[in-house]
Image 1 (tube, rainbow, N blue to C red):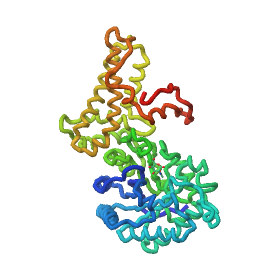
Image 2 (tube, protein in one colour; image 1 turned 45 degrees about the vertical axis):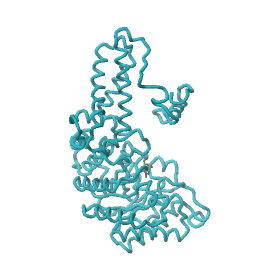
Image 3 (cartoon, rainbow, N blue to C red; image 1 turned 30 degrees about the vertical axis):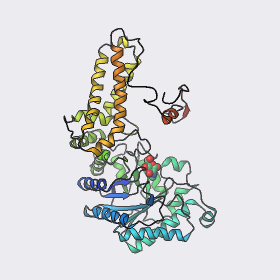
Image 4 (spheres, rainbow, N blue to C red; image 1 turned 90 degrees about the vertical axis):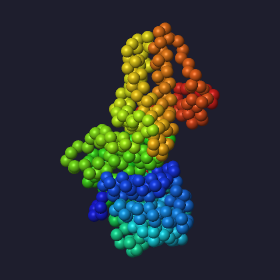
Length: 461
Ligand code: GDL
């Protein structure tokens, strides 16, 4: 295995689907990173046409100027800027003119001051054309050829260039399914220039845990330490959610086994304060001390609180923590949200006639969430409010409905009376094609799908 001897990459990859961040957001990110000791930003927004779909077209003057400004801003803060290109949707690996086009794009970026590059082959068809198969024999060999030649070309022009590669099979599950063909990763390990870093997302695309043993096994195959492309806080796959929980599920010992940790976080930039703050803390955490994600979260939430200044009453930290707990991590709610969910469930499973004081206690907790979600409408930072509003609105609607139900059933003599609401009407509440389709198949905790049990109702019901 080759140790690259290059600095550990710690920071962010803007590598999600959805609207790319604005120049102002990227500058704010660079300020956070410089203040927190993160050192790397990778530019890879999936829905920037010229990053992926139109990878052959050079940047127009205005676009090039904007990129040069960004690269300059990173440099001023001593951050490494990595420019990534994703030609995999339709590249003809055996066609030399395609390689010329890749070089032209990197040449344009070199002229703009960029010194670090990546070639990404994630989320692409893994079939080879006949011409490519005849020349290279395998998908991995084709990608290695293109990457190695571009790497050599880049290093000739910029000897200190860092060069990264994202494989088509980029997590344990994809490797097990032989995405990219038999021996895809082993071929990469053998054929890709040893100086090229390889991205990896862990056992899964969204990895709850990244164990050291998993990465050690991968090192054997890749013959190098991977750079973790960490999707823990990515939310582009589910528009109802965001993740503001802590960096978690990765032991401190992992740092010694990888060449870098780059987070690919929430599409909505302002929601990434805690994810990135805690990543920065994780990267600098003493090697001998256990990493405590919950404590890191609570500390980072206290730092985030000033962003929540409103036109009216200030948010209480404990209420912000409660709200954040409702949008914690993909596989886990925060403690308070989980406790609230369990108490809601327990209440609804019980006959309302026997609720007693439990209903009032539950309603006090519900009132906290209703209050804090209402307070957000007065946030002075409007981009933060806009990033939150649609998701939190939905949470508020559900809690308001539950609260109405609990209050209704608690009225004397109402325990068995059917409950109706004036505000939640079929067609406008939880309605729509997607909601209807979602009810047809259920994903069970063991990962298997089965038909859902809902009746064949009409639109919006
Ligand atoms: C992916 C994509 C990434 C996306 C993420 C989460 C990689 C290497 N590629 O598969 O662009 O944001 O999942 O949806 O992770």
